[in-house]
Image 1 (tube, one colour):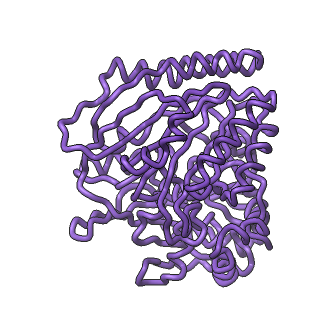
Image 2: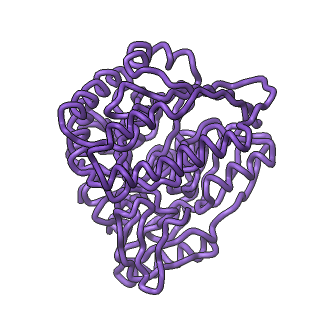
Length: 439
């Protein structure tokens, strides 16, 4: 799922198709030394620098008209330490390659998001997460990271070494330097039993605390214009493995979730009046199913239908009220929402700008099919999310700025002070960081 559309013109486009930029030059370093040299050269030439992964962010967080650093040669596993149970991986490695390589070694991450096309550094730097009662985001599983700073020096950060940088750089937004390697905590590969089943939204909201308490990983999708959801519960299992059959997997994951869903999206975009009817049909198309497999085959799924997304983290105890307000807004607005709303959770963590920093969080993600007008829906949703002190995903559409973040992140000042120290001349600045972090 390549997101780069860089042809001869040197124009770069993100996966969602809503960000386009033309950098002054592109650099594809083959080593950390080459990357550090490119950073020093950019500073000499008076150009800003940004690293760009797979372009899965819907914000312009990786956009630059200066030097665009592509990490596709900085990939692969550097080291597996079975005593410490860690794996050190180059920053440009796609999550998909990491997951498959770990599985071959009999290892796994504890938790992950539902897409694995992103690079490890792009995913962690923007706070990408899955869902979990006790297990947190990808960044919270980092034990050490390597960072090239504005002066071209290479910094190793962990709880013991440069701990104040470690506290911030795990979700660093590309503002503190360029991450070149990440050491993740891993564990012996295990089995997850997944149970997917439709459930009325009213029941999910009424029983949400219980569903969250009883399952290691609980999430659900609500189909706007309907009272229907599809729930998913993932729990560790002693086995035996019972993977989704090839034909059933193709039917549910490719035909229904990508093929037919894509056709329905095209139809809804062309004829908005049919969207509520299509939503009702879509929400009843998926039937209950159970399967047991290794983690990445349960947590992740292919996403071939392109969309634009906004996601906010609200305090977990505010989830039910927030969703009820969202449903009421959609019902009275006359909006035609053609994509399900995804709901997940994460426990509080200790990372300065993590969306779950110091508070148990619930995530509500709203999507619209690529090419469909999304501004009115996202604006109305954002008004609801911010009323609950919501924190937007750094890689997804939002309109918040530094003044807002200073209010909803207790450690915002700590992050910006560290940035002043590590990048005083704002070598890694772009328009997005200017907005969200201030000057």
